[in-house]
Length: 232
Image (cartoon, rainbow, N blue to C red):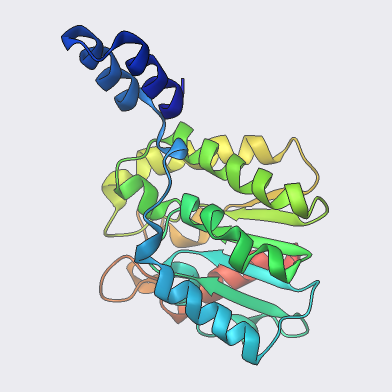
């Protein structure tokens, strides 16, 4: 049951004491993927992308990288994939639902032939579980393919990091669910970036991260590049 249905039920029950309890239960049970992100937080960044697009129009058929700060902070992205028309639309702190919410502004207009999405890291840190990550990714895919049915979409695995290692268990579950889902559609792919970022002790390699223990340094991005290049 979604929130709109819950409100209709509340009206039917006239919001008596017992019905208020029922309504609260409905709202708490509603998956986060049904809730719109707080778009105002990202509005300035999205408008900056749109202003850039006016000054430098993006030709269709390029390769779009979208998602959170691991994409935004990839300053050498275009240089790392020479010969490809790379579009960077990362906005730091974002979750999967944010990329879906703004798809009509920073995805669909570019008509990319290929999309690489990195998100889910912030989602899990905010309390979302693995099934919700999968559902949110499915919504992103559906949103894109509704208008661009031939566009290929690769999910870059939620990365292990020093700062969020305590969340590694849920990240692994989410990655496994998404990986399985992508196998059912030739237009989808999953890029497992865990192996090069993990040492022999099974922990994240410090030499691949900046001081905050969360974001990648140049060596970390080079490891990603080697895995992503064949997917282009």
